[in-house]
Amino acid sequence: MCISNPIASGLISNAVWTGIPMRTLLEEAGVRDGAIEVKLHGADGYTDTFSIAKAMEDTTLVAYGMNGEPLPQRHGFPARVIVPGLYGEKNVKWVTRIEVVDTDAKGFYETQGWGPDFTVPNRSRIDGPGLTEPFRAGSTVSLNGMAFAGDRGVSAVEVSTDGQQNWQPAEISYPGTRLTWSFWRYDWVPERAGDHELAVRMTDGDGMLQTAEIRGTAPQGATGYHIVSASVVA
Image 1: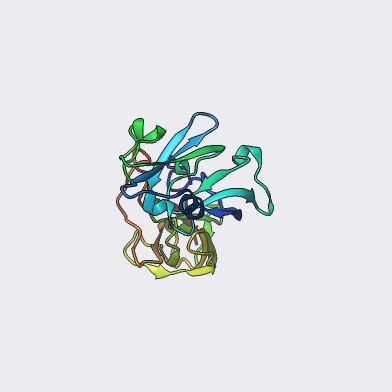
Image 2: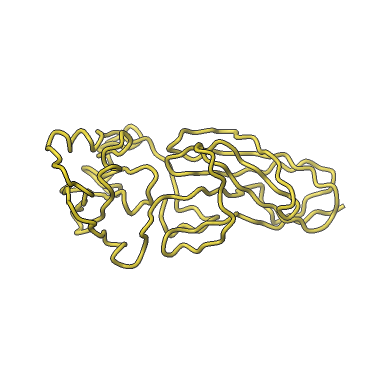
């Protein structure tokens, strides 16, 4: 997911990656005491960094395949880095060199004022149904959407249909994994005509509730609830 992705937008996707753990390469090369970060270099001159601890996690990959095929050129052929839990800018494409450094080095976007925290926060959104036509009081409306928590998984999703006065559990229709998004659905039967504020929030696999604090995309990524207005007629 891009750090510039607003709460309800689509700069996010999932794929099945094939590669080897970065830890395997680093252990083979030998990492000296005092290592703080890895600094990744791309063929296009791009650089970025993350902690040596993150580099040594099992899920941090040097990937050479995507969705059962060789890595496409636009996705970083012949090799790119996948760092679950961190924003997309840390997932450097067209990698030519992995450097281990003993200083707090800054990547390209960090030098532009982004960060310093690049951890993907909990987020969720309402995707459907379309809200262009009014709903009818007494008729079931099947709300649905997505929830994502970086590398922490999704344990619960809740929906409010009364301006966040009350929250009801939604069904997680597709749980995904700790590294992917999940899909949810909620059957709502509006009881009265008028405008209704709908909102969604999620809890990650570590038990942390999505924050309601509204934060813009810069410099650490957007937070807050996705809120939409639904019109109901008698």
